[in-house]
Length: 86
Image (tube, rainbow, N blue to C red; front, side, top):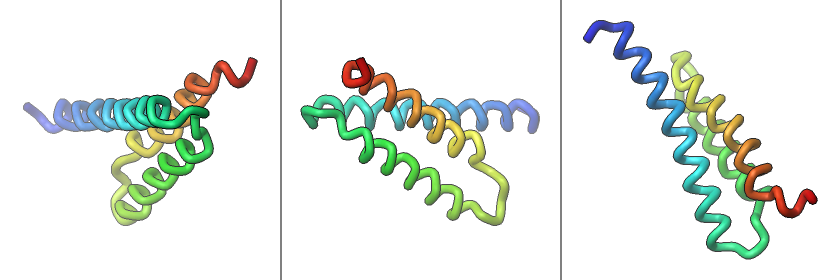
């Protein structure tokens, strides 16, 4: 495999990891707590995104993981709280 293919697979795996991490945490919160704790859900995932960003401050990597965490946090928070909106 050349460098370009490895780089694209790495970016794809970062997006997939952010999707699975947010979804698993959301399902856990939904099954464990009666009202969905959307502030805790958002806070945990934004905290993870900040930790990863500060951890890799020198290198400009993990951008797709951090942005995927932030976008998926908003999407899954709305999805799991849909019944409380209407």
